[in-house]
Image (tube, rainbow, N blue to C red; front, top):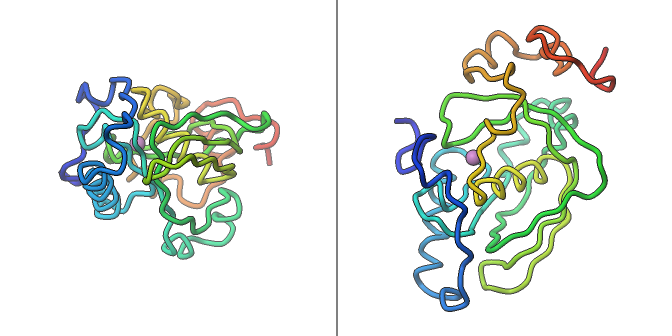
Length: 203
Ligand code: CO
């Protein structure tokens, strides 16, 4: 298994609605240890986000970050996806709402669906509210890739996987995406896969 310690699709824990972190758990060694394990697991797997159910804990906790590693991607790709370094962020008991109605469609993966990817349409901008790792209120407005990560991780806490939201015809192995479709525009890929191409994706 490529992602040791990470629950894979089919594990029922990924389909539960996670329980809120109760006040009695805030600022405890147990919670700190859970968050530390999540961060270590995410980094070990070269991920940009992880939700507690992915390590078998059905609690409303997720972590995400975009390290400087992202700067190795081609500048056009970073610009198109709005990816940039983003500090490690922890959310407990989050709520999420879209800001505006602008949406974007990109390939997305998940450490719990190892080796596969698909196009997923998500809000370009969201506001996430909840508690930080100390239990203090935290609200962030996110745009671009961090907004996508937050929506993906928030979904995990509802028992939702990206395959529930994907454009089914775009489901493929990461291997195919990297080889067969490398460097192609999303609009071209959609056309090849027999998907209807939205106006903003037409050449
Ligand atoms: Co995931």
